[in-house]
Length: 228
Length: 42
Image (cartoon, rainbow over all chains, first blue to last red; front, top):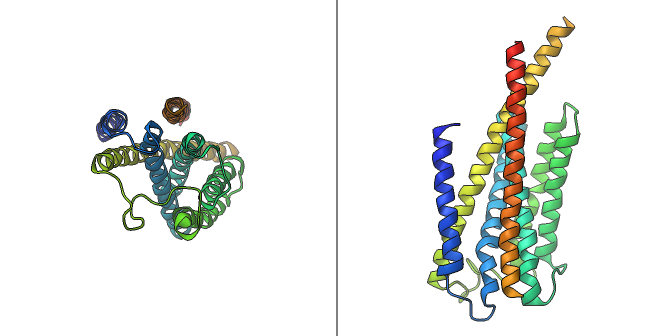
Protein backbone atom coordinates (compact mmCIF):
# COMPACT_ATOMS: atom_id res chain seq x y z
CA UNK A 1 0.00 0.00 0.00
CA UNK A 2 1.27 3.48 -0.89
CA UNK A 3 2.48 5.55 2.13
CA UNK A 4 0.46 8.55 0.88
CA UNK A 5 -2.71 6.41 0.97
CA UNK A 6 -1.99 5.29 4.54
CA UNK A 7 -1.36 8.88 5.69
CA UNK A 8 -4.54 10.11 3.97
CA UNK A 9 -6.56 7.24 5.52
CA UNK A 10 -5.34 8.09 9.04
CA UNK A 11 -6.04 11.79 8.49
CA UNK A 12 -9.55 10.99 7.24
CA UNK A 13 -10.23 8.71 10.21
CA UNK A 14 -9.13 11.45 12.62
CA UNK A 15 -11.40 13.97 10.83
CA UNK A 16 -14.38 11.57 10.98
CA UNK A 17 -13.89 10.95 14.71
CA UNK A 18 -13.55 14.70 15.33
CA UNK A 19 -16.64 15.36 13.21
CA UNK A 20 -18.66 12.77 15.15
CA UNK A 21 -17.60 14.31 18.46
CA UNK A 22 -18.56 17.79 17.23
CA UNK A 23 -21.94 16.66 15.87
CA UNK A 24 -23.02 14.66 18.92
CA UNK A 25 -21.35 16.30 21.92
CA UNK A 26 -20.36 19.86 20.97
CA UNK A 27 -22.99 21.30 18.59
CA UNK A 28 -25.94 22.82 20.51
CA UNK A 29 -29.36 21.17 20.43
CA UNK A 30 -31.64 22.83 17.88
CA UNK A 31 -34.52 24.69 19.59
CA UNK A 32 -37.46 23.39 17.50
CA UNK A 33 -36.41 19.94 16.32
CA UNK A 34 -34.25 18.83 19.25
CA UNK A 35 -31.62 16.11 18.90
CA UNK A 36 -32.99 14.72 15.63
CA UNK A 37 -31.50 17.78 13.87
CA UNK A 38 -28.06 16.19 14.45
CA UNK A 39 -28.79 13.89 11.49
CA UNK A 40 -28.12 17.03 9.42
CA UNK A 41 -24.36 16.69 10.20
CA UNK A 42 -24.28 13.36 8.34
CA UNK A 43 -27.08 13.87 5.83
CA UNK A 44 -25.86 17.09 4.18
CA UNK A 45 -22.12 16.17 4.03
CA UNK A 46 -23.13 12.80 2.51
CA UNK A 47 -25.19 14.64 -0.13
CA UNK A 48 -22.23 16.95 -0.81
CA UNK A 49 -19.88 13.96 -1.17
CA UNK A 50 -22.35 12.27 -3.55
CA UNK A 51 -22.60 15.42 -5.70
CA UNK A 52 -18.80 15.76 -5.77
CA UNK A 53 -18.47 12.10 -6.86
CA UNK A 54 -21.02 12.56 -9.64
CA UNK A 55 -19.19 15.69 -10.77
CA UNK A 56 -15.91 13.73 -10.95
CA UNK A 57 -17.81 11.01 -12.82
CA UNK A 58 -18.99 13.62 -15.37
CA UNK A 59 -15.46 15.02 -15.83
CA UNK A 60 -13.96 11.52 -16.20
CA UNK A 61 -16.72 10.45 -18.61
CA UNK A 62 -16.14 13.50 -20.81
CA UNK A 63 -12.39 12.83 -20.68
CA UNK A 64 -13.02 9.21 -21.69
CA UNK A 65 -15.27 10.22 -24.60
CA UNK A 66 -12.55 12.58 -25.83
CA UNK A 67 -9.44 10.43 -25.27
CA UNK A 68 -10.63 6.78 -24.80
CA UNK A 69 -8.14 6.62 -21.94
CA UNK A 70 -8.60 3.58 -19.63
CA UNK A 71 -7.58 5.67 -16.59
CA UNK A 72 -10.50 8.06 -17.20
CA UNK A 73 -12.86 5.08 -17.49
CA UNK A 74 -11.57 3.63 -14.20
CA UNK A 75 -12.05 6.99 -12.47
CA UNK A 76 -15.60 7.29 -13.88
CA UNK A 77 -16.55 3.88 -12.50
CA UNK A 78 -14.91 4.51 -9.11
CA UNK A 79 -16.59 7.89 -8.61
CA UNK A 80 -20.03 6.65 -9.70
CA UNK A 81 -19.88 3.69 -7.31
CA UNK A 82 -18.83 5.82 -4.33
CA UNK A 83 -21.44 8.44 -5.32
CA UNK A 84 -24.17 5.77 -5.18
CA UNK A 85 -22.97 4.71 -1.70
CA UNK A 86 -23.26 8.30 -0.40
CA UNK A 87 -26.57 8.87 -2.22
CA UNK A 88 -27.97 5.70 -0.56
CA UNK A 89 -27.03 7.16 2.83
CA UNK A 90 -28.80 10.42 1.92
CA UNK A 91 -31.96 8.50 0.96
CA UNK A 92 -31.93 6.56 4.25
CA UNK A 93 -31.00 9.32 6.69
CA UNK A 94 -33.51 11.76 5.10
CA UNK A 95 -36.63 9.70 5.90
CA UNK A 96 -35.22 8.87 9.37
CA UNK A 97 -35.14 12.63 10.03
CA UNK A 98 -38.50 13.28 8.30
CA UNK A 99 -40.61 10.78 10.29
CA UNK A 100 -40.36 12.54 13.69
CA UNK A 101 -40.29 16.06 12.20
CA UNK A 102 -42.90 15.87 9.39
CA UNK A 103 -44.84 12.85 10.65
CA UNK A 104 -44.22 11.03 7.36
CA UNK A 105 -41.31 9.02 6.00
CA UNK A 106 -41.52 10.25 2.43
CA UNK A 107 -43.30 12.70 0.17
CA UNK A 108 -43.07 13.04 -3.61
CA UNK A 109 -41.79 16.61 -3.64
CA UNK A 110 -39.24 17.89 -6.16
CA UNK A 111 -36.13 17.44 -3.97
CA UNK A 112 -36.91 13.94 -2.75
CA UNK A 113 -38.17 12.64 -6.09
CA UNK A 114 -35.24 14.03 -8.07
CA UNK A 115 -32.78 12.56 -5.52
CA UNK A 116 -34.40 9.14 -5.87
CA UNK A 117 -34.21 9.55 -9.64
CA UNK A 118 -30.52 10.48 -9.36
CA UNK A 119 -29.86 7.30 -7.37
CA UNK A 120 -31.75 5.22 -9.95
CA UNK A 121 -29.79 6.78 -12.85
CA UNK A 122 -26.42 5.94 -11.29
CA UNK A 123 -27.55 2.47 -10.18
CA UNK A 124 -28.54 1.91 -13.85
CA UNK A 125 -25.08 3.17 -14.85
CA UNK A 126 -23.42 0.63 -12.53
CA UNK A 127 -25.72 -2.19 -13.71
CA UNK A 128 -24.89 -1.33 -17.34
CA UNK A 129 -21.20 -1.56 -16.52
CA UNK A 130 -21.62 -4.78 -14.55
CA UNK A 131 -23.74 -6.77 -16.99
CA UNK A 132 -22.84 -5.47 -20.45
CA UNK A 133 -19.84 -7.17 -22.08
CA UNK A 134 -20.07 -5.32 -25.40
CA UNK A 135 -16.94 -3.46 -26.52
CA UNK A 136 -18.93 -0.25 -26.71
CA UNK A 137 -19.98 -0.47 -23.03
CA UNK A 138 -17.55 2.20 -21.66
CA UNK A 139 -18.75 4.67 -24.33
CA UNK A 140 -22.44 3.95 -23.60
CA UNK A 141 -21.78 4.31 -19.87
CA UNK A 142 -19.96 7.62 -20.40
CA UNK A 143 -22.87 8.98 -22.46
CA UNK A 144 -25.37 7.86 -19.78
CA UNK A 145 -23.21 9.60 -17.15
CA UNK A 146 -23.22 12.87 -19.12
CA UNK A 147 -27.03 12.85 -19.34
CA UNK A 148 -27.41 11.62 -15.75
CA UNK A 149 -25.33 14.48 -14.41
CA UNK A 150 -28.04 16.95 -15.48
CA UNK A 151 -30.14 15.60 -12.61
CA UNK A 152 -27.42 16.64 -10.12
CA UNK A 153 -28.08 20.28 -11.05
CA UNK A 154 -31.84 19.67 -10.82
CA UNK A 155 -31.54 18.09 -7.35
CA UNK A 156 -29.42 21.00 -6.11
CA UNK A 157 -31.70 23.69 -7.53
CA UNK A 158 -35.05 21.96 -6.83
CA UNK A 159 -35.57 23.63 -3.44
CA UNK A 160 -34.91 27.00 -5.05
CA UNK A 161 -37.09 26.44 -8.13
CA UNK A 162 -40.08 24.74 -6.46
CA UNK A 163 -42.07 25.02 -3.24
CA UNK A 164 -41.05 21.82 -1.48
CA UNK A 165 -41.65 20.05 1.80
CA UNK A 166 -37.88 19.69 2.07
CA UNK A 167 -36.31 22.50 4.14
CA UNK A 168 -35.05 25.53 2.25
CA UNK A 169 -31.26 25.92 1.91
CA UNK A 170 -29.58 26.73 5.21
CA UNK A 171 -26.34 27.78 3.54
CA UNK A 172 -26.33 30.19 0.60
CA UNK A 173 -30.10 30.52 0.97
CA UNK A 174 -32.52 33.39 1.62
CA UNK A 175 -31.37 36.42 3.67
CA UNK A 176 -31.75 35.60 7.37
CA UNK A 177 -31.20 31.87 6.85
CA UNK A 178 -28.10 30.21 8.27
CA UNK A 179 -26.67 28.28 11.18
CA UNK A 180 -25.48 29.29 14.65
CA UNK A 181 -21.65 29.56 14.69
CA UNK A 182 -21.23 26.38 16.85
CA UNK A 183 -23.47 24.45 14.45
CA UNK A 184 -21.62 25.87 11.46
CA UNK A 185 -18.31 24.73 12.96
CA UNK A 186 -19.58 21.15 13.49
CA UNK A 187 -21.11 21.17 10.01
CA UNK A 188 -17.91 22.25 8.24
CA UNK A 189 -15.77 19.68 10.07
CA UNK A 190 -18.17 16.95 8.97
CA UNK A 191 -18.30 18.37 5.46
CA UNK A 192 -14.49 18.19 5.20
CA UNK A 193 -14.40 14.76 6.89
CA UNK A 194 -17.01 13.22 4.57
CA UNK A 195 -15.45 14.81 1.50
CA UNK A 196 -12.06 13.37 2.50
CA UNK A 197 -13.66 9.97 3.13
CA UNK A 198 -15.34 10.11 -0.29
CA UNK A 199 -12.03 11.03 -1.95
CA UNK A 200 -10.32 8.14 -0.12
CA UNK A 201 -12.95 5.64 -1.29
CA UNK A 202 -12.70 6.88 -4.89
CA UNK A 203 -8.91 6.63 -4.72
CA UNK A 204 -8.97 3.03 -3.41
CA UNK A 205 -11.69 1.99 -5.88
CA UNK A 206 -9.75 3.62 -8.75
CA UNK A 207 -6.58 1.67 -7.86
CA UNK A 208 -8.61 -1.56 -7.74
CA UNK A 209 -10.18 -0.85 -11.12
CA UNK A 210 -6.74 -0.23 -12.64
CA UNK A 211 -5.65 -3.65 -11.33
CA UNK A 212 -8.85 -5.17 -12.76
CA UNK A 213 -8.00 -3.62 -16.14
CA UNK A 214 -4.51 -5.18 -15.88
CA UNK A 215 -6.09 -8.60 -15.18
CA UNK A 216 -8.32 -8.24 -18.25
CA UNK A 217 -5.31 -7.18 -20.34
CA UNK A 218 -3.35 -10.28 -19.23
CA UNK A 219 -6.35 -12.51 -19.97
CA UNK A 220 -6.55 -10.99 -23.47
CA UNK A 221 -2.79 -11.58 -24.00
CA UNK A 222 -3.16 -15.17 -22.81
CA UNK A 223 -6.11 -15.73 -25.17
CA UNK A 224 -4.16 -14.30 -28.15
CA UNK A 225 -1.10 -16.42 -27.21
CA UNK A 226 -3.29 -19.54 -26.96
CA UNK A 227 -4.90 -18.82 -30.33
CA UNK A 228 -1.49 -18.50 -31.98
CA UNK B 1 -38.42 8.33 18.96
CA UNK B 2 -36.01 11.17 18.12
CA UNK B 3 -32.99 9.53 19.76
CA UNK B 4 -33.90 6.17 18.21
CA UNK B 5 -34.03 7.73 14.74
CA UNK B 6 -30.78 9.62 15.34
CA UNK B 7 -29.06 6.39 16.39
CA UNK B 8 -30.57 4.53 13.43
CA UNK B 9 -29.28 7.20 11.01
CA UNK B 10 -25.73 6.95 12.39
CA UNK B 11 -25.83 3.14 12.47
CA UNK B 12 -27.21 3.00 8.89
CA UNK B 13 -24.51 5.39 7.65
CA UNK B 14 -21.66 3.33 9.10
CA UNK B 15 -23.27 -0.01 8.24
CA UNK B 16 -23.39 1.06 4.56
CA UNK B 17 -19.82 2.34 4.62
CA UNK B 18 -18.73 -0.82 6.44
CA UNK B 19 -20.44 -3.00 3.84
CA UNK B 20 -18.76 -1.06 1.02
CA UNK B 21 -15.33 -1.29 2.67
CA UNK B 22 -15.84 -5.06 3.06
CA UNK B 23 -16.80 -5.27 -0.63
CA UNK B 24 -13.59 -3.41 -1.55
CA UNK B 25 -11.47 -5.68 0.67
CA UNK B 26 -12.96 -8.86 -0.85
CA UNK B 27 -12.60 -7.48 -4.39
CA UNK B 28 -9.00 -6.44 -3.71
CA UNK B 29 -8.06 -9.90 -2.41
CA UNK B 30 -9.66 -11.58 -5.43
CA UNK B 31 -7.99 -9.28 -7.98
CA UNK B 32 -4.54 -9.56 -6.35
CA UNK B 33 -4.79 -13.37 -6.32
CA UNK B 34 -5.80 -13.45 -9.98
CA UNK B 35 -3.09 -10.95 -10.94
CA UNK B 36 -0.40 -13.03 -9.16
CA UNK B 37 -1.62 -16.18 -10.92
CA UNK B 38 -1.61 -14.53 -14.36
CA UNK B 39 1.78 -12.86 -13.89
CA UNK B 40 3.39 -16.12 -12.76
CA UNK B 41 2.11 -17.80 -15.95
CA UNK B 42 3.59 -15.03 -18.13
